[in-house]
Image (cartoon, rainbow, N blue to C red; front, side, top):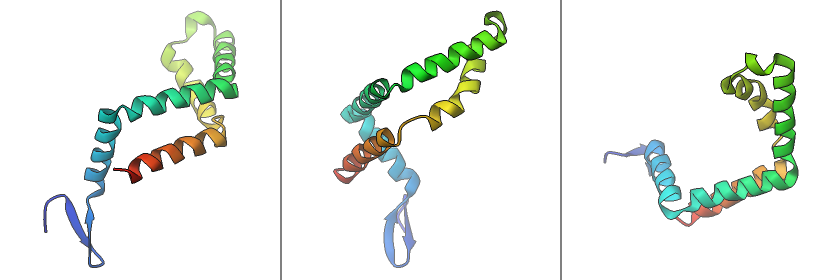
Length: 105
């Protein structure tokens, strides 16, 4: 069996790790990764997500005291809410764009 491939149910499949590496490389080298990051930033801005996260950061800093927190503390405190507050429509659009890119590889 060739390196980077595995036999499964009689079908030759590409090793998932190699496939992931290939997708990452293609996303980066084509500029698609940067385009998707810009799309995500614009969608989050338009949805009010960025302002919501900014307010949560300010609230955390006020509660803990400006001199008592590090950037890492703020990220640790706000990240879970930040991830859960990303609108489903933004997640779906980004996933759709990624799927289209992968299908065209």
